[in-house]
Image (cartoon, rainbow over all chains, first blue to last red; front, side, top):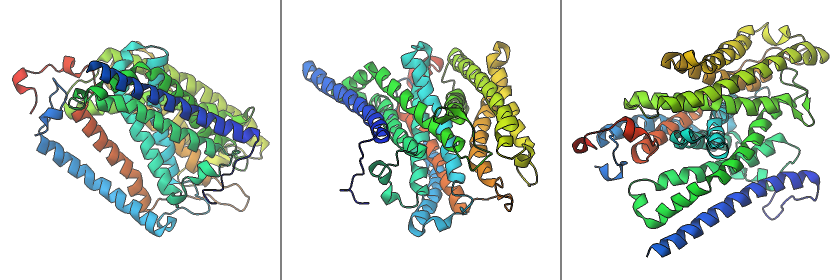
Length: 47
Length: 418
């Protein structure tokens, strides 16, 4: 009910659901981090 | 007035004319926002939903926009994973349409849950046995993918692109777009499928219930395939509408015909599977649960056999055949008819799988339960349409959405912008 009560359980259902979800989020996060850092480096190299 | 923002080599209408159009559509949008405010303020008693119709107009609209928005993930898959280079000329627009569809779906859900302040519960207190949880996870994550796919197009705006960091960021994002497209395809496969799965697992609703493979009813696979099949039809239909309104050719015919051909084959394969599924359900599944097919299509004022014939034959088989045959596909009028029929067909399928499922009597003492939405439900369903028109207008005006536009509509340098 409350934000500090995260309903996590070590079972297959949670592992699959949250595993897939965080897998996708991680790929997006890593991809964007790579693009932003590379863009910053490329910009610095321009100067 | 805003000519500095308009893509180079592109001709657009005057700013006052554009602003008047936005104001007119904006009035419709405000009507929807007012209805949305009423629902959030006063609650779901503003709707005509009841114990029969916990899923109603909004869920149909949700499923329909997600299905037609499937053009984004499927076109992205074809462009970035299967390397079909011609589709680079329509992928920006497919992504924008997908972005509109998915943001609309999330908005509709935010209205439908009644308590939007508790929207985050589905992530925090997830019911991992529910297909709708999978839908919520994948839908939110895929919307993030669409946002990422949309960003480079925004950064290519004439002024934004002058900022070196933005230019490099757009370039780098294009470089690894295949990774995002693959993630989008993965997420779409599951949420499109699970929306179908929700109907297919309802063993208490014999109209929807299907057998299947392992935990997935056949509707899981039919929904995924149909979104990939009919989604490009919607992308091409909106492209045609945009071309008609702007009075310009924006995408070359070879690109349109290629995507239409792929869509045609996907539709044809889907409709064969759908016919087999329907026959098996009508002759085996439903009778095993004690129902004849006539039970689902008679004794009521609306749901007759016409809806089955319209969905499968008129709006499924016909567009499929038109789009796979070269002579009919390359006829602009027939091709447009196929796109329109296809979009109606997929929306009708989602209607049937949401609303007819609820309408059919299940218990011996039940009667057909027909439903008509309240004006608040109608207004909030039209709201995303107005939002979509505004977003397409703004992006078309200020972003280089169509790479072939300049080539297809060469303008005199003096009259480059109005």
